[in-house]
Length: 191
Image 1 (cartoon, one colour):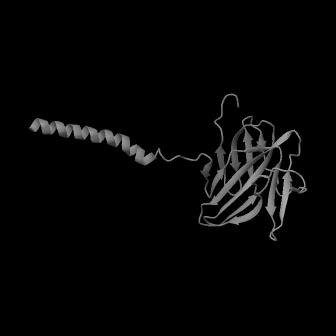
Image 2: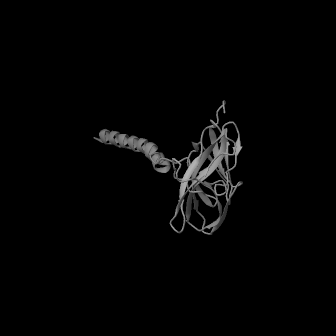
Image 3: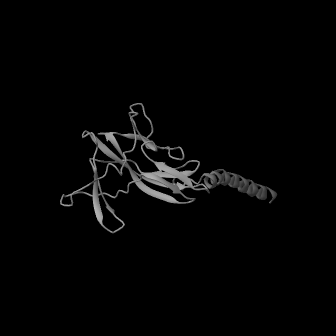
C-alpha cells in the first residue's frame, strides 16, 4: 500500500511539472492573443497604419460646415507614378498634450528597393472635381496640419504618397513628435 501511494504521488508530481512547463509560458506570453504588427507604440504616441493602397488618382468627398458636399481629386505630379494611400490612427498615450505637426517631413514610406517617399500635402494637392464627371469616390480624410493631441485622444485620417508604379513597400516611419517605424514586409535578398 505504501508503494502504491508513492507511485501515485510520483505520477501526480510528474503530471504537475509537465502541466506547469506547458501552462506557465502560455499564461505569460498569451499565444492565443494575436498581435497587430501594424499597431506600434512609441514614447508618446500609439500608431496604427494600413498597408498602402494603390490608386491612379484619389477622389473623395468632403462636407463643409454649411453642409455642402464637394468632391476633390488628387493626381500624381508625374503621370507615370501612382498614389499610395496609408490610413493612419494616432493616439496620445502620454498624460500631457502632444503638439503634432503633420507635413512633408512628418512621415516616410520606404519601398523594398529602398526608395524613400514623403507624403503629399493632401490639402494643397486636392482640386475640386466637376460634379458631372463619372467618378469612383473613396473614403479619404486628409491628415495634414498642426494640432494638439490631448491625453488618450485619437485622430484618424489618410496620408497620400506619390510612388513609382509597381512599388512594394517595406516600412512606414512616423517622425512627428515621436519616432515610430512599422515594417510591412520582411527584408529579403531580392528587395
